Image (cartoon, rainbow over all chains, first blue to last red):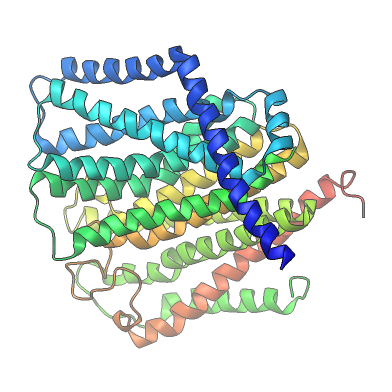
Length: 232
Length: 233
């Protein structure tokens, strides 16, 4: 009886502390606006470079692949710092007040939120600079949300791994790209539906469900594996 | 089982059988493939062996995280190295095969060959294990290296396998059994294969895989001797 109550209490606490950690990350983002604006500027500059380097508005295929490649690089830049910014002393402090599942949950949620914001901003910028070849904008926005989630989840864990190694910034890309590649191919395929391509009956939900399943897999793996990265 | 000798003898006998029977027994005469169909006994087995070796590497990584035994770390990295080596051999044997079938007889461009889903799968696997070794190289602390690389190994392996199952069903393929060809299964379909060839193919898979495990155990023993001063048992 007591043990089940304890477990319940533990989980309630877990939510509370996860929220506290999430709040801390968001507050930190607001306090250190330069990093946030840095990523925004990164997105704007990249898309502007693409705009200048292409002769005219690209066709749907190229638009699609450019969009997803940009998402990948934005994510590396946005999510990379999530573990690198934590100093050793601060990690020790978190270690004493929270358990690893709470900590990684907080980070995952924060990075997903950050990435969603960035994806939607870059989508708007794509519309402004590179036209709009989409036949169904809302469908594509939905796929972007799904994809942004998946990419940021993977790179959060990669960032946690790379933070443990020495030359970390470059390592994130090396570790993350091969892992994210299948998901990215899946997303490119999936997003063709928003360009008016007709899919086989049920194939759309199959692909979307598959992406969602991969996300769940990443979350489960992160919660299982993070405790081993956490203790030093 | 690993220390027993019988499976090494078995591996040797199976490989002798594979090479002798594989080159001498009759094979179906197929258009384009012709005699190169014998490459099945080598090329496909490399791929299978690679997957088994990566799976063993994954198993040792899990074991390391559970018991923090340095031996498991050495085992996991050795099996990963051997798996990558098999992957490269798979590419090499595949390259020979491509040269005389897809490129010359089917007139495929190099670009379409490289976008082959199974090549993408193998490339992802090699990139992942390349990253794994880069990660290992970036640590000076041995315990930390073992722990973090085990975490990456487990994560990457768990992400790799769904992708190997998904991608072939997503992209058109030149390999036999792809969507669009007569059989619907993009993985290996055993009904596709001639019965004489199956008699050599299955033993060949076992033989090559056992050889891979054998080489890996030798590598592990070598590493253990090199690191004798760290292991205190």
